[in-house]
Image 1 (tube, rainbow, N blue to C red):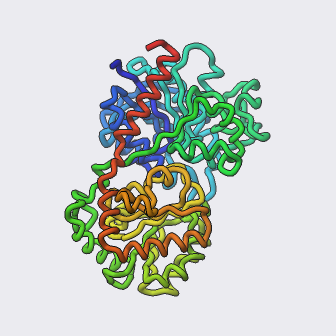
Image 2: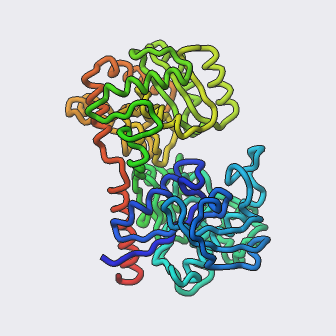
Amino acid sequence: MSEIKLLSVASEIYPLVKTGGLADVVGTLPGALAPEGVTVRTLVPGYPSVVGALQQAERVRHWDTLFGGPADLMFGTARGLDVFALIAPHLFARPGNPYVRPDGTDWPDNAQRFAALCQAGADIGRGSVGAFVPDLVQVHDWQAALVPAYLHYAGGPRPGTIVTVHNLAYQGQFPPALLATLGLPPRAYTIDGVEFFGKISFLKAALRLADRITTVSPTYAVEIMGPDAGAGLDGLLRERADIVSGIVNGIDVDVWNPGTDSHIPAQYDARRLALRARNKAALQERMDLAVDPDALLCAVVSRLSWQKGLDLLLAALPRALTYGSQLALVGSGDAELEQEFTLAAETHPGRVGCVLGYDEELAHLFQAGADVIMVPSRYEPCGLTQLYAQRYGAIPLVARVGGLADTVIDAGEMALAARVATGIQFAPVDQRMLEAAIRRAATLFADKPAWTRMQRNGMKADVSWRNPARHYASLYRGLLAERTGR
């Protein structure tokens, strides 16, 4: 099996910089691909957190000016990852969130910032770093999606290209007047290039020009070819359906391991589930909930947004509380949802607890202590929360959409009889069906043998990167064979 050299380009990578699941995927996939004969180096912006973590770094490329200032491409290791870091202080030496200013608005030069990342990716793809000339370039989401465009319009030999869509709703749209600023030729601004309803769209460019399109679950790959989830790109995706595939994400099963997790009071496994009770009590105490082992403790670890369906949960909450349940929530996002969940906690002391923000240690405690992890998303490309839940013996209660549909086995009559259920799904995604799903959870929770069986089913499920890595490696080899005969 010949080695494949893959350049991965992304705007974030765990554990160096993270705002969501994209970082987890970009950070864990390289290690999973190594046994498949795929060598990965990842290009990321030189944010302060990245620069601070880079070790044994050497400069492998220099630009006198790159979108407004000098820049260097450094290669080194960071937390066990092989990383190219684009050091451009005028673009990336900024505190806080990579995409928005402290007031929550986008950085006004985001087009130039991530075009610089893409230009660097295209340069590496064309062989500017002689020690690493990639066979393939995989770009993640809109921030990296101009790489296939730069390679296409430059002409000449190029590597194969794959675009991976983690969320089609975020497309990187900018005014057409920026075309020349971004270093794109006039011929790029067409329906067969970067133009999208009168704007430049980074993501649309990759969907049109990349050799392969992947997204992060088979169901989401089908959903985005329809108008409801296609975000205006469904026609293009249907046109290119033969090169679209869905590969479910995995998780780092070493980081997310209840048997060794240092973030939780009691470590446990499927044979020692009784120890979870200590974690449940600790979570109830942490969230100012009544410490009651018999209460159905439902939990949410999420960005607070319309997409995540949390307005539906607020509407369903009064009915849910009649089933003897509790709700614990950690997350941040929409200001109105933050206010309403805070008010719910004040209105229902001991029954509802809310922590605004994100805390990695607390997220582990949620998975280890909650009875139910709720993901009522209106759409969900893959989702990682439900995978963590199964790993930790929490029952995922999820909308039947995207990757949630692909990764949770619903506790219907046949699945319960066959003893294969791992969670609860509901559809359509509305208040009534969410309330019904919570009622089902309360009924199952009262049936301790059935509940324990579901917990153990989830804990023995393979939610690692092993199978997804095999699928990616197969896709890479197929693309290489098509392009080079290898």
